[in-house]
Amino acid sequence: MLVKNGTAFVCGRLQRADVRICSGTITELGVLEPHPGEDVRDASGLYVLPGFVDIHIHGFGGADCMRGEADVRRMSDGLLKTGVAAFVPTTMSAWPQQTHEALAGVQAVMDDPQPHGAAVLGAHMEAPFLAAQYKGAQLSECLQEPSMQAYEQMTKGLSCVRMMTLAPELPGALELIAGLKARGVVTCAAHSAATAADIHAAADAGLTQITHLFNAQSPLHHREPGVPGAGLADDRILVQVIADGIHLHPDILRVAALCKGSRGMALISDSMEAAGLPDGRYALGGQDVFVKDGAARLENGVLAGSTLLLYQAVHNMITLAGIEPEKVIPMATSTPADAVGANRYGRIECGAAGVLALMDAQWQFVDVVA
Image 1 (cartoon, rainbow, N blue to C red):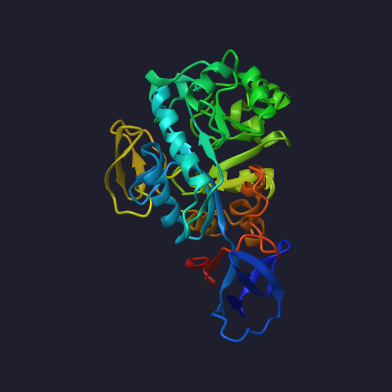
Image 2 (image 1 turned 30 degrees about the vertical axis):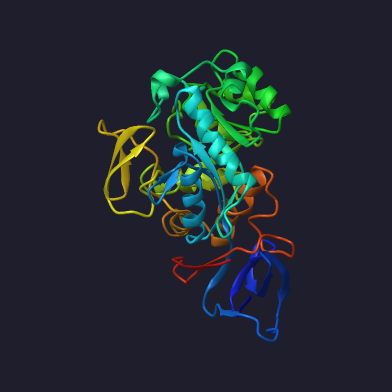
C-alpha cells in the first residue's frame, strides 16, 4: 500500500511525504512512485498521522474488557477503524477472581492477536489499590490495601499487566510501586488523596504517571498542590488527560499541555462501552451508566469514564485548547507508546507499525490505513 500526496507527521513535524506499507510495516518514506499492481491511497489535502495509542480504555462499541477475551477482540477490531493502532485494555474494581478472568482475556488476545485489529499492548489495572474517598465510579467494596500478595492473587502468573493505577498514600503502596517497577510494570497515581509530598515520594520509588489528571484525586491548591500539582511540577511524571471538554475545562487542558509539553502528556480516552454508540443506558463495572450528550454518568451523577475517541481528543486539543498540532500529535501517538515501552507504535518511520490515521484540514477524522 502506498499513501501518496499527504502531509505526514514525520520526525516531529508535518511535511510532504509519501508512505509505503508492506506486510503491516512502514518500509519507505519520501517522494515515491507506485509499484506495479500496488494499491494507492491518495491523501491529497489530508494529514497523515501515526496510528493512535490509547493506554487507558475500558470499552468501546458495546464491548467491555472486564467481560473477557471476546470483548477485547471486539475492541481490537472496532478501535482500528477509528485510527487506533494499539491500546491497553483497562480493568475496573472487581473481586480478585473476576479481575483474574478479565486479565486472562487480555492475555489471550496478546498471545493470539486479532488478524486485523488494533494491537493489545498489555493490561492496565485501575484497581483495586485505591482510596475510597476518591473512588469515582469504582466499587468501594472491592478496594484493597496495596501488596504484592494481593497483586499476585489476581494475576496468578499472567504476564499481561503493563500498568497499574493506585493511591500512593496507602500503606504498602511505595513497596508495591518499587516491586512492580522491578517487574517492568508502569505505576500511576489516581483515585487518591495523596499530598504533593506523597506523589514526589512515589516518584522516588518508581511511579511515572498520573491517571486522568485532576479527576478522582486530591485537588490543586496553592498551598497544597495535591496530586495534579505534583504531577504537573515533577518532570519524572507523565500526565494522562481526558480531552473531551467534559472532564476538564479547555483552559485546564491548555495549562496541562503548556506545563508538560508533548513528551509529558498523554491523551487517553478512558472510554467505556458506549464509545462509538448513541446516548442511552449502558454499564461499567457492573453499574448502570447513563449517557446523555456524550457524558457518561452513574445514576448519582458521578462521571463514569467517557465516550471519547482519541481522534476527537486530538481535535479538541487543537481547537478547544489552542495547542499547535505538531505538539498535540505526539500526545496521542509516540508519547503514550513510549510510556509503555511500545516503541514500534506512534511514529511514521521505517520499521514502525503500518497503521496511519488520516485527518482533514479541520482536524476531523477521515479514515485509517492499515
